[in-house]
Length: 157
Image 1 (cartoon, rainbow, N blue to C red):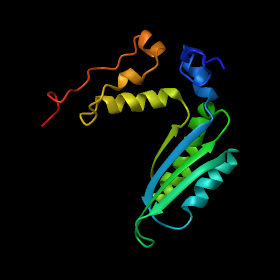
Image 2 (cartoon, rainbow, N blue to C red):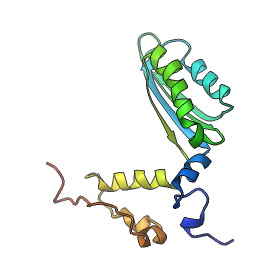
Image 3 (spheres, rainbow, N blue to C red):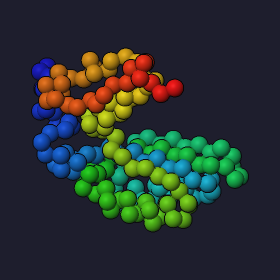
Image 4 (cartoon, helix red, strand yellow):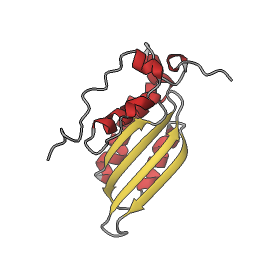
């Protein structure tokens, strides 16, 4: 099996970020709101209306009466990147407003997201190892700016 350089893999960032965003198909929706009846149904209805397939769903309430509800939903939606704005409008209208919800919608399947999380952790004062060693050589050759790294002596006290 031949491994393509990261710049040639279809699910990785390239010079055409717009095209990449339109190809994304797995998304993650995080919701937090006061617990009440109908939240899961509302989310499922919106996703169903868009033709999305839920591939993973986790939910939790701190208390069945008066608690805080948390939900993480991962779903497959063809052309998620191209349809994201329309989906966000529906979430705002049918979830945020009626349920007083806070939410976040992100792509869940791009290398770019993984690298961004990795670099964020790397800049954290709690992360001591040099994780840039784990980045593919092709990214290091492109001059990816990892920013200043905090060391134990530069950590805030």
